[in-house]
Length: 106
Image 1 (cartoon, rainbow, N blue to C red):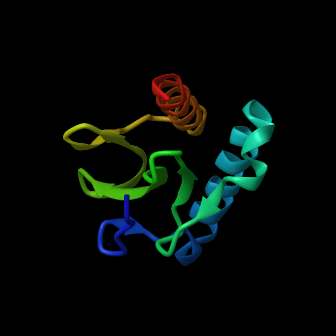
Image 2 (cartoon, rainbow, N blue to C red):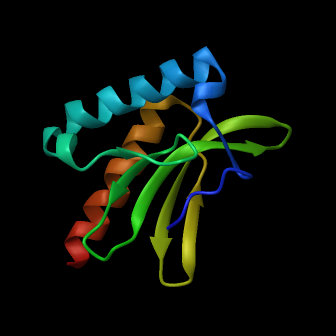
């Protein structure tokens, strides 16, 4: 799933967003140390977890309801599903849950 610079706010544009992205990365690796070699940063600054299908789970910031929020975008049969967790911890849980679901399908 390609990232879009026009949709995702680039974390490098603000210290808070970058620090939050690194917190999310650390929490992902705490929950799944095996992601160390798979976890990537896309062109938009979003975290990407590549899947065996060639698609990815994308964790980034999207402008929603007037402000940038962390979202988790997961591939689906219809294209993609957008999840809007409210805290960094729930962002991580949503991403790991999506990863577990994708791995169970393959």
